[in-house]
Length: 413
Image (cartoon, rainbow, N blue to C red):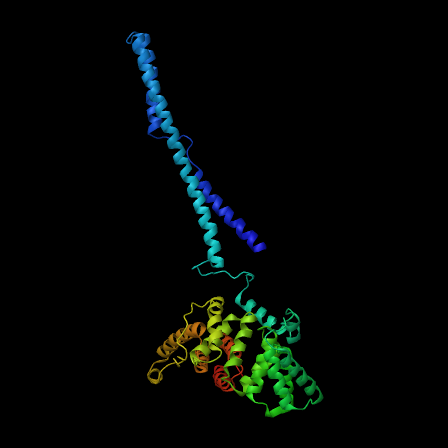
């Protein structure tokens, strides 16, 4: 509320100053009508002098006075009209400028119609380092799965299922209670609770399946469990769902559903920049018919805007490595030290800008960290390495490649 009070106050002050400058005018307004009035008044004075000197007769003096007085009235009327017109124009212009200033600023901030909003209501004026620290704290202290579920409104009864089906599900529940080690019973219970929209009961049944299978649990078992956790929390990625996603990515680095939820978690905890990179990579990796493509396409424009990226949706599945070619590397070997550094500087600038806006595969992140190490920009290399840990944290092969580059750059053990 304080933000809007200050903003409205500043807008009013600026608009007032502009209006004051337009409305301020010379009180001694001078125009053609004013000149005519002065001439006619001089003529009346001259008539009186001529009458005193005997140059004009009384009848002629009366006739001249009448004519000059008529002209004075006409000129005064014209002067008043001109004055109103001139004084009214600044008022109208001041009103228009005020409306444009206030309305245009609000439209640019909030985004109205075809205008893209540039504001971020609710965000304080924080430096980037403080924002990242705040986001890390937000992620660590965010609500648990149980707290998220407790905050949701009560679920409305599902009317499309008939009484016979509901009785069968209740019988299944009672049976599973008496046979807690029956994997197939829990599989059926998880499926049917999910069909009913009882996602909390469904993930609990799925969790029991994971306990019973132990090391034999499949990636699909884990993915189903993670998916049910998010559904039960109303689309919120809880710490429990994040933990499941990381376990999945450790076993299956290319699992698209887990990557989607990791990006969603980052978007929900104040890191739209990392969410954008994760989701952009998924779009570029594809395939087009993957389950996660549609939800990413629906959300990534807003995430990109929050991340400060002027983004165009790429062709799905268009990922390609865009690092230096073999010819670049070969030519670098024949360069002097200064020329080699200059070439690396150019590569770093281009690669850094593109990874920040478009994202990219782990090979490019490793190349960037290595190049920064050569340039002895260890602080920047370390910061990028830490970002890579978040983006590729669930991909052991990718992190192995990036870590090796960070070790060569001297920013990792």
